[in-house]
Length: 465
Image 1: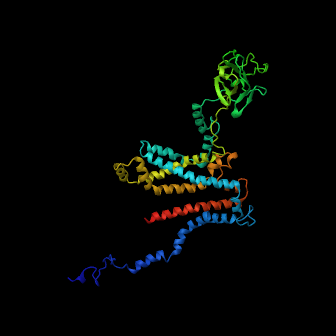
Image 2: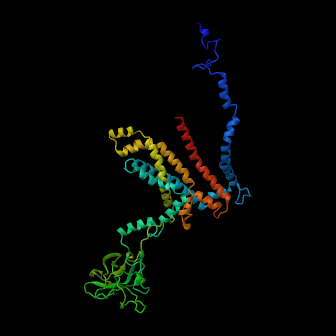
Image 3: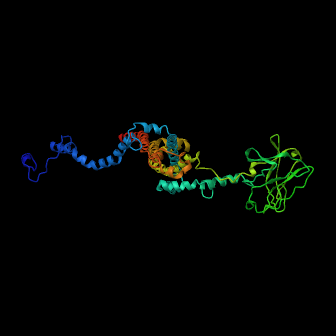
């Protein structure tokens, strides 16, 4: 039998013979190549058709608002008169807007750095604790809270009243542990008394103290219901030839029937009041009044002036003014870090899971300490993830608005101002100048663009690897 008689042989193919298939290394049949080219090159309208919905959305939601904002920034408040770059000049000359620019710089420099650092520490430490997953859940949980709710929470946390604000409740508790409160806050001498106000809130006698006679120190300004429960009747101090003695008491009798400067029946003793003897501006002796209000100083106090230091009268410590002009921005940044440290931790923990454990163990075997392993191996290997977190948070803080608007009270909102908040205030929050507001929006866009370009280039470099 010849080869021509076999099924599929040249010139004698049977009806059921298999078609010729391209062999490896041989040119592709012209028909197949033509069909591939036709899909990619000769039908561009098909690609446009698929991209059209996305292009429409992109143009309506991104391109048009950006273009309109740039156009609107060149017109006046009403949008009827062309002013060129005048609105941008207003942005960089207005004191309130410059404060917003300064605060934005603080936000960009501090908030992403602190949040990323805390996220890195949490991610590394949670790998070493037994309840690491539960800890990650607790730290990440604030991300489920809206900025509005977080602002309300921290507005209460920073409340000045220690009975409401958690921050001041802690600060006051620590302060009162190491420093005793004033014995009689608000107490003062009578206007015609021998005691006169001196520096620092203290009161000093005009006359010199003497032995053998009473050196009384009457005070007023203390409500009866603010006196200690065990306050008793004030007693005249007995004269002593070797001591300077006197009485400190509340020179007020219920009903107003007492005589000023005289210890009348029913007038209460002020115990625990510190009395100092001053000579040449120096304290030479001190004593504390007893339960009956009396005190006794040594003989060297004779001829000195008597002083009641301000520690006797200072008001009750109420904590720190977290929402005051000097601390408002750091306080709001702390609230932001509380929310976003969990986000940084989760991303860094995902990157940490891909770090080869062999490198870490080899470094430990070679004698490296945990700090060296962390600084020279863990952090360099996590550098791409850390950059992603930093860039994301930098873009986020440039448009922060909710926290500042909710946490900052009205009297210090100008001190906490940021560009996104100023954009709202200038356009809709009373300024009614959408020209300046649009200029601020353009400036925000220009600030975000370098960060976005850097992020895109980094992603392209990683895609080529």
